[in-house]
Image (cartoon, rainbow, N blue to C red; front, side):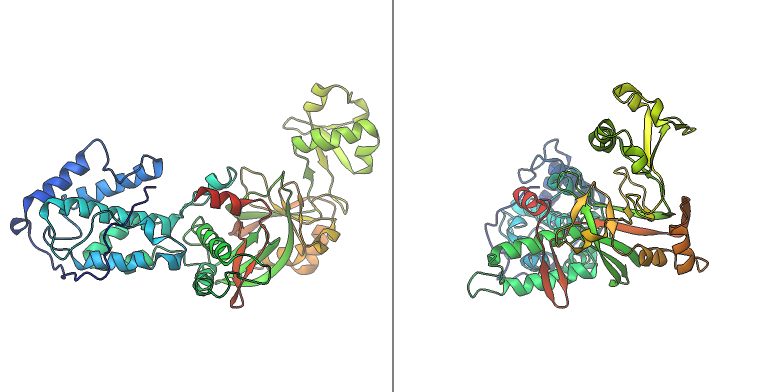
Length: 464
């Protein structure tokens, strides 16, 4: 995105109110200049050459085309009230964790405009609005640039439509404010950012000895991550905060159920994503992923012929009929023979998925599940899995997701978990699930910080 330099302040200038004027009594030159700029094959100098800027320039072109190439921010001789409103909004960008300097224009706005420069000023003001609106709605950084495995759920926001409404209704500040995420946690971080920016005593933010500037930057980065989530998170949803090793069930913006989780190791990280839980599986098989078979299962088998039996693992042919195979008939030194097989751990107490798993289909093939390794929940740092999320209180989570199916009582859930026979139950309504990465969040009027377990804070800081 193009970052623009401010050459003359908008604030402090006497701006005359723009009440509109017809094309007949307005100089023709600015409209002609707008037309020429919009129809030119090469974007103006203030539009950078990256893809995001090119896409935004197309929105600006459509904006002016739809309004007949008329000026939006002035009548060609004096600026309108929309211009000063945009200036005020940009001055408050720091409250949203954004840098006002990124949205300043290089053309100074004066009480009286030279018609020869009115078009250029208008184009840059529109670019400033769209730049600020895009960062506010979708984030400054792109999640996939921070981590290739991180794909945000783009918010359903039309910034060009917001600009058009703001201009026509003369509600520029309101149109921008409405683009920010509505999640209570975003608002909580915004309050904490304001509080931290007011700390100037010694430059140290807290007892951990972290510099104040670093904490302010950390809060702002985490606010940006809320812009990578959908506009409407849902009336109720599950939020796993990966670096906090915590799951919360959220209803109407409040946590109604919380528990510890175990997430992926640094070399097998849990991917941030947004999806919907559709199914709960009691007494599940664990279909062992091929990479784990190659790296862990087969080496054990070669050392101990009884390894599969000891761990309740069966092998089946990699065909649709899943025909069971006698492990004694397999030449384990033949790599091709093993490649034609699939390994799965039978349901039971020792199953690596525990007694229940919660599915939200995604191309990473990660899910929530129980675990027999309960002692891991006593650890402070809990990054031990192969990418899936192990939950501390599986029965409580099962009761919650099946609460609209009263036939699934706690006793019946417990019986299904211990039945030793896999059983899938479809949820009546899909439940949104968000695997997020927040190293700062508001809690009880203060902000909590946790370690950057996967180095995403560092990666995002380098990108900004």
